[in-house]
Image 1: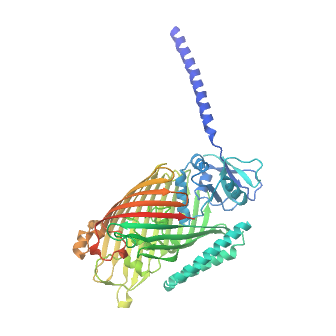
Image 2: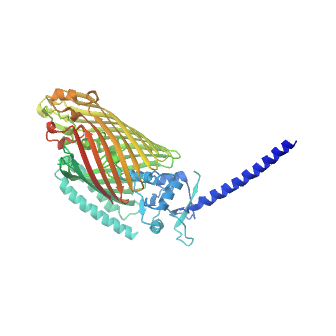
Image 3: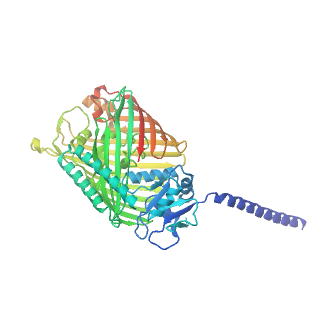
Length: 161
Length: 430
């Protein structure tokens, strides 16, 4: 009987300990996750919607220059920052899950073989925002959306993998 | 918008000026080629000029390009100019590309290229490619379309963008497969291409099928005839048909790429001016097996190309030739950081795999056997100074002279079997 009690006590303490550990890990993971703030944005273009929905797969197809039109037929204008930019690296690695140099090589292949149009490379985040604001069909990304920003720029909400 | 239109007008003005100059230079070309180039260019530019203001019809115009200049030194033998114990600056590439979308599903792509490459290319401005793409179907799963005009042949990983330093794996495309001496034969021709792509989550499979007809070009044809020293006659080149089928599998957004290309290229020569003689025919069938593996730091590429070559009914002393060629290369590139990379490549070329060291060839024709193969090591370094500026340096250690352009060879007897080459290249894109 004693031995059984001992085992039960031990099991309970192990359970609570592992729960505690789990909580600690979850806390650690959660605190390290949202280290980057990144919003995908697009021009509102002919719609009254306040947000656009895309799957990550669609976004990847757009940034690989494979998907060339929005569902309403408007050509997609891809806007990106240069490979030096931390934001662009975050966007490639954490959202598209592709190496930035690999993505760029793909762009060069498409552009120089004449099979597609090159993306517009913005000098900085402000220029990226300006281009998207003024170009129907444009898509890009930014590290934070100004709540008082132009209504022609809307967030893109990413669904799924 | 007004600003955009203004920019577009300025760009077009630049292109018009370039084109006008280009056509001036090109006018020394022969009749039919010139007509085609002129017609296509003029039609395109007219179309672009007239549709500039109609935003509904014409939605986007982009232009870009690049310029590359190389510096070449060889210990023996010339490569692209007088490089033997000297420095040759005769390798320059300048290209302007233009692309425009119109009527939603159509895209025009065209480019003007000037290329100097020793005696092989004299820098004349020419229409490198100019085609219209119609995309019939394009969604996240499927793409289907067709393009027509002067299209590029898409053999292997690099043929389509072989002139662009930024897409090449080094200063030159791997010479064992993409021989500079056969560039004009392998590159662009007037024809049609069908393309389709199926995409899954992070993977895709694409298929392209093209048929094209190359402009008759006496010089390109003559580069294909083996330098045997045996005199021959040829009439006028009439057809240069080519067909390319390419399957490309892309796994995990480019982490692994696998390619299979089948290409058939042929030329016919009309010999009727010499009497009742059959046409001379030359043809090559090639299979390109290509594979690439990428990590964040490393890139490994390899391509393996067996070929079947035929030369029939050449007038003169040279009998019909049937030979099987074999070439391959393996390359690894290490990215030290975002700016610096080093690469090592091993390339092997046998023009006739049944006579790998050219002994039979030498016995038969008295021409050195090393003209029939080439094996080389290439060690290189690249510095991506910025997104638009790239510097490269490469050292070649070569045994054999199989990929030296024949125009760089004054006399095969004075060629050296073992030679080295040092190259520098600066490339700027805009």
